[in-house]
Image (cartoon, rainbow, N blue to C red; front, side):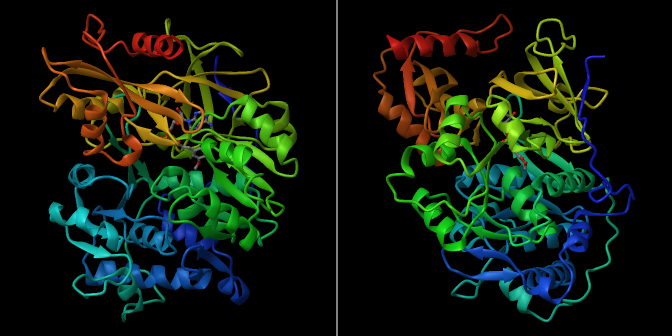
Length: 538
Ligand code: 4UW
């Protein structure tokens, strides 16, 4: 039939609950390690401040904050709450409290600019924002009522810390019936084409992926595991691991507000970190620089890699340098609510250095011939399509994009070119969608093109990815200048940099007479990509 199924059984321990009236918050709280000793176990440590929060404190904080949101701030089922914060020991508490009152969580990258934030606030229809104090200035112009994560000095804004310490009920959750089918979160992703869109995830999606994550994390047996989190919790990868999933298995997570190579090495040694969900640039940095820095990585047991491709060479160098560390690549998307593939064993991972694992239980896949639209047999390359209980419901308010991405049978078109071998290992070969990945972050060419086109001396523009060893890919712009204009590469780079988050910056510019387009007017990015390769070698 051309359909690949995960051949692995989830087992009864991690069975996905089917009762319709279970929600993400009640599920996470019910999975918290139980008893006094477990209550005192540290859930999160902030690396920079050394502040920590125990499992018991997370639970009580969730109850108080949920009560405050519901009774004090009148947050109701279906209201969207916008969270703008770097990783913090309260991030999970906020997420779970918001979900527990049936409100919908939308998260954003704190690096985003004022106008990027405003767009998301508007698109998501946020009723309330929760902001780190240093990001507050980006929310004020939106007019959305805002509370801060931690207490401000001048006392003008309410804060989550104050609400938690206030006199709200810390023993019960407000009684709000929330169903698995209700929307839980709206995360932003550009998908296969165009600008950022709201990926609508239901409680059922989150519950399913959390159960799968607990199963694949394989840490429940030794609950003294210590994870390191620099992957941001606003992104599906960080949200699923650190925001929600890992709380179900009782590990301690050391949080970094932002990734820094040296601080990471210090954290690993100081806190005896043994697990790091990472991204390829971090693997790259460990291979290239760890020796020079005089590291102690002896505590590390497992390092994951996801969000962008990791080359076979890098995989092999990493294994050679750090033979005691299991390197486990995985592949996932915001639209699939996180990981879709995994390696169940290190033997498998070592034997398949180019693969990103096998399908996670409950996932099915097809590899679709791009020309004919027909499913392909093992080893043949085509677009990877996925089906699972974790696949998003839709793109928020965008029927056209939803229909272009999910077919009538519920298959998600990933926009990734790949193949599956006869043993079920999944290989991602190339991205066919427009998305650029810089350090694992999404950069949408369409968004940069519209910024470029707003320049009075730019007539036409196209943005493509250029491969970069250290960061994965960088955005490069092809620009058609207005007649007689002497606009320079640097001026173009500065113009874009003034309007977008730093990770989206155009880092290379080439001037061209016209942008190649198809008869239907679509930019022929492939032609530009080949042209850029030619330019780089010539
Ligand atoms: N190899 C090649 C990979 C890989 C990859 C992703 O920003 P999004 O929407 O989402 C993510 C999610 C990553 C993730 C990985 C592992 C995991 O367990 C987990 O669970 C929480 C999450 O990055 O970008 C999706 C796109 O990123 C590329 C690919 O193009 C995909 O469509 N990508 N992982 N291992 N490419």
